[in-house]
Length: 183
Length: 191
Image 1: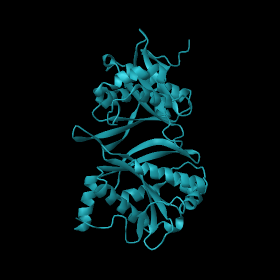
Image 2: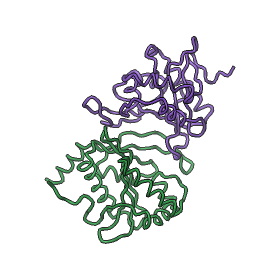
Image 3: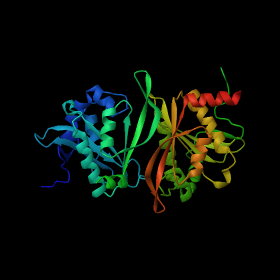
Image 4: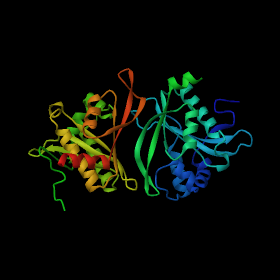
C-alpha cells in the first residue's frame, strides 16, 4: 500500500466535485467554520457552484485538492488543498486547510494533514516553499501552523472587516530549508 | 464639495486605455524582459491584437467593479507613458491592490509615477472609499520598493524566496497603506 499520503492519524485522498461537493457544502453551512476559513463574504452556495469550484482544482501544475480521512474509521473530516497562485510563482504553492467536522477540532488531525502535504510538496513536487494566510482571531490554526514548521512572515494590517471592526491577516511561510532542518 | 479634478495632476493625467490606440504600445513593452521582471509579469511577449483583447477584458472587469485600469499620459500629450491598475477590489472589505508601470526608461526618474500614484491614492480613498491599499514588489526590484515607501506605503510581509529569477530566489515584499495613514500624511502636507 502507498503510504506517502498516510500520516499518524489521517490520510489524504484525491477529491473532486463528485466525491466532495456534499461534504464541503455541509461544512460551509457552519458560519463559524467558514469565518475561520475565508474572508470572502458568506453566500449560501448551490451544489452546482460548489462542484464547479472543486472541479477547477484539478491535479497537475495548478495543484491539488484532498479530503482528509481518519485512519481508524475512514471518516472524511476536512480538506487540504495547494495551488500555484500565479504562473510567476515558481516553486511557491499556497496551502489551505479546513477541518469541517467540529468534533475533530484541536486534536492534531489538521496538523497531521499539514505534515503529509508539506512532505509531499518538498519530497515529490520539488517545491521551494509553501505560503498560507490565517486570521488573527484563529489562534488554534496559528498554533497548528507553527507546530508544522511555518514561520510568521508578516501581517496585512486591517485586511478585512467583520462584526464592525477590522482584522489583520497573518502571512506564514514554510521554506524547504525550514522543512529540511526540522526533519 | 471639493471639485478638484481627480484625474489631472500638474504634469500627468489618467484616462481610459484605448483598445485601438494603446495596444501597439503594450505589445512593444511586452518584448522588454526587464519591464516584465519589474512588473512581475509573465515573460511572454504578446501581439497588439492580444493586447487589445487584454484591454477589452480589463474594461469588462471594470464594468463589474473588480478592477480599474487607467492609462498614464502627460497633460499635454496623448502618448501612453504607463498603466495603473486597481486590482482585486473587494467591496465589503474596501480593499484593493495597486499596480503601476512606466513602460519606457526615458519616462522614468522624473517623478511622473509619484504624481500618478498620488492621484490614484486620492481616487481610491476619496472616491472609491477604500479602507486600505496593498502593493507588492519583488526583492530584485529595490527601486520599486523605495518608490512605494516614498509614497507612504509600509512594508507588511516578506515571503522568503517566493520567486525565482536569474538563477536565484527572491522575496515577495507586501506593502500596505491604511486610509488613516494617508489622511494623516495629507493633513501634514497641507499644514
